[in-house]
Length: 445
Image (cartoon, rainbow, N blue to C red; front, top):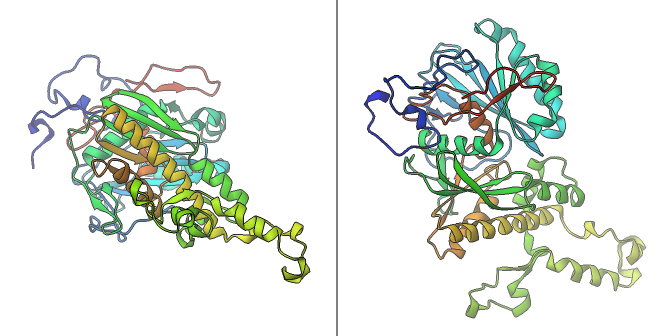
């Protein structure tokens, strides 16, 4: 197998710029500075673990949602890793850290997520990683924390007080781009397209990845045009994102977690709630390309059914309940409400993404963020919308670690050069902060 030094020249990416000139001295690099993360992580032969964790996954693995994001095995990495990374968003906090294989055969990148409202669960977990006896026995230097997302500021003091370690805060948008570039170029069977016939069609890792559009769906939605390494601009977005779906479903259904909501949507029938083209025309409106099953109005049937209930004789209602006492939400199954809302939010995001990709001439559109969570109805809606509006010229691309782009980007941003088999990361702008919030030390490069 070729070494990094033998690789031919390739287009630069946000995760590859520091791989240039391997074997030759570089000016203004940071490998001579003492700071956390000064270790090369070898991802040669890296793969996403399957159920038994010992071999690469089989193509066509079923989609997943929930907290079972697969870890990434690094079979050839031997050196110590001195930091972990966390991305704390408005709804979810995502953690990435390295652990050694107990048999001495490399290690793996571990992925965990926590609800942000239960931030202390995350902090307690990080505390066990920092101070746990198992890690103490194998570490020669203390762990550091790389943090990004709004929670890196909001919860900084709480994390610092509990862990008592150095925390470096990274720019959120830059971390997203670095993380996505890494997955696009380095990890096999990570990026895929979705159709009902082939729900996980993997695409090959690419080096000519620019330009592209990143649609990051968290509590809200940011859409970012990426033109090159560390060259990006936010070109649009929406306030209707994962937080919107979570909030409305919390009001309208008994579900207590986002995963419960997705599970209900899986079983629901939105046609009991949504008004379709067929409900209006008695069939499709083929002249303008609308099928009978096309949603004409999200929640469009609700008012009609409510009106019918109000006009029922009181004697026809169960247990003699007055029509004014009917619980509005109880007339509709929570599963149907969940599916309707999921379609509403996803359709809105998909159409905005298409319009921005068309406006900026971008062929590749990648969807990231914890909203997706491998849920096939969400991916179906986004994929169908991209194909429909572009007349088949554009596809929606998804990632198996879609919710961890920022956390992985933060993890990579505090590495020296040569992070990866082929590529490594861009220059870091991390600033270490002490407990009082004042800048301490030098800016990470």
